[in-house]
Length: 404
Image 1 (cartoon, rainbow, N blue to C red):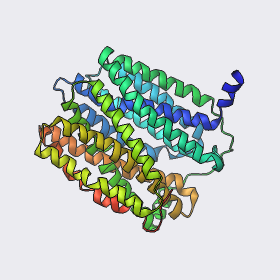
Image 2: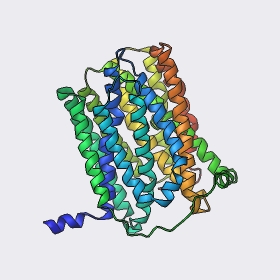
Image 3: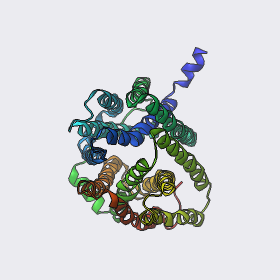
């Protein structure tokens, strides 16, 4: 039995396991943290959560540049450090005064450090530690397990919060983060890292200016951050749902339902063999991105519409449009149009900056609406942001071939 357990401890399986554990934590941070911050607010306001999002995404853009040398020279240490910041973030949620002004700022900085330090090294290890012949297996297993977690964890956390409160739910996430850190110390890269020096900012700027496709990549990332990837548009749907349902358990159930729908349509999309079929399924859902907020403008107190809006945003916009279509397109653009692979890390970091700018601007506008007492009008903001799905669609698919 112990031999079988040791056999499972391969670098490939550890990479899969850490992704799954991170997805478990994200269910708490991305869904229930907003409800928690609203609950502890005297005015039941989402301001603290919006501030958290602004600081979090702005800091991720800054850290993408500041930590470039760390990513180059201390890849494994950076990856392990991300999990330490994950533990510190959960401890901060449990131990700090949730009504203090500094609370959202500390959580945001810890989360941005975790995200920045996790994903850059993780993407590097996915390439160097997984053989090409096993890459499809790794990605498919990771996808199945992470999507399963997105179904199970929101329900568990929702009922735990409803029965015992947020602290016990946070303790579950703390245990998950600790397991993730322990697993990282079982990871020992087989591939020897080549010593490479980071390019200067001027070199990176010249490289991007010399390629029109890379400039389009930045525009694509900005639109992605504005409308579909952890954007203010998605958070508005979350706020509207929270105002319409009765409990955190309901919030967990609807989040799990969205994950089921996402799995179904992502599976269908991946089986499509040509671009015409791809465009057909994307166009089918495209009008709903605009019509959903419009319907809530016309019927502002309709609970069914609020639930439908949230489930649609989480499953189709976040799951299909962003998690599958956009990421595939971005990776394809970089690999196809970047002639010097030594610039890949820097270009990805600059893309992260463009993404952060789109997100941050959206949340700043949302914060302005809330602080001016215009919360009833945030659905109009969602409607305006939804119109940017049109330029997203034009950039989302390549003209001549698909990226698999």
